[in-house]
Picture 1 (cartoon, rainbow, N blue to C red):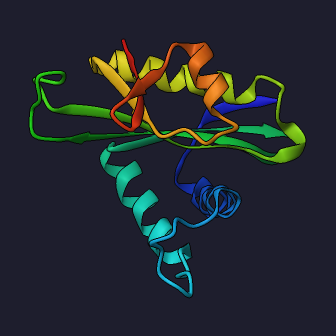
Picture 2: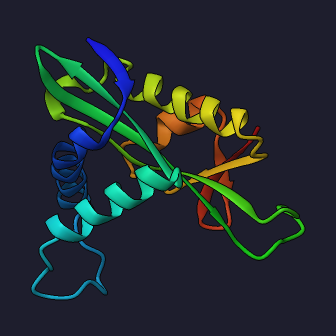
Length: 153
């Protein structure tokens, strides 16, 4: 298995893995029905955000197949007492195909994302955790914080 930074050539598979993640999590009760086709909007998002640096991702490959991904978004919010700079690093798109789970791949991707946030000078990383992912994030040091899980860096 190899982990590497994602690039523009990976966008079609990033789209597919993101859709698989969303399918497994299930749509929220307020989602539009029928569910929209996300291929084009996701492709546009990844292309724009990867080009401008507001989203970075890594992919894990095994036997020539992309088996996992993890990403990190960077954005600004109005400053708060806990984040006076208003800068947010948000971990997203963490997904490992079922047959490769419980092998430490997601943990390795998570540590790459945390390292990137630190390297860019962010003080906090946030995420929303699935029920299955929560133990991994807690083990890494994330705690519940106002509906998010967060970790001070």
